[in-house]
Length: 293
Image (cartoon, rainbow, N blue to C red; front, top):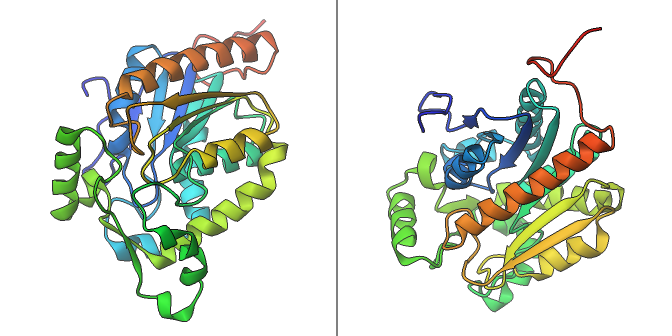
């Protein structure tokens, strides 16, 4: 990534400078910004400024993750929005899986700063085809004292339909390379925090007026299309939906990742044009777009 800001090994944050429209993307629970790197580079080549922060507690050990709450993860995304707003007059916010939910929450906290939403395989509950039939009971089980030591272990196909990419991800997970592939097992305490985030987002959906793009695979092994249908019915603004026909959950890495880039770039262009024509665009703090009389 020659055009990226170089960050220390302990921080996997991706920042790719580009044009006046910014795109802020959050990775999933127990994940890493690396899972967004391919899409981030594609969007940067299309002329966008892209920022994918490392969420608090992530890219380290299970203990690091358990030591944080969902509000800490949200604060990481909020800091990313502040960074983009220094250089961009229009910003879209979202992410992958749980990261999409963090984007939705941020849109309610700073509605005037979020011009659009990019929701990639949004996950309100785990009901994908690869999960055990009793997975719908997981949330109730997690709330019990005996679940304290429970861990949600990633299993085949690891959210990836492409055999080659899946093999690379699985190997990195099994070797404990959490900075690159995320955690193989998610502790129950982190799952509880995710569901607290879900509860907050569900209450906020109707107040979200920013236009949204939802991209969800038909064959999602982690979270089914029911998650997207739920959001379509309840979001308060315009919703554009793309259903992928050759991907599993990690749409930013799987076979149709180029299509994810193409549709996101197109939606970002439309959103930016809409914001600027409607007077919603914000003057950047730095850059030639700010002029004085």
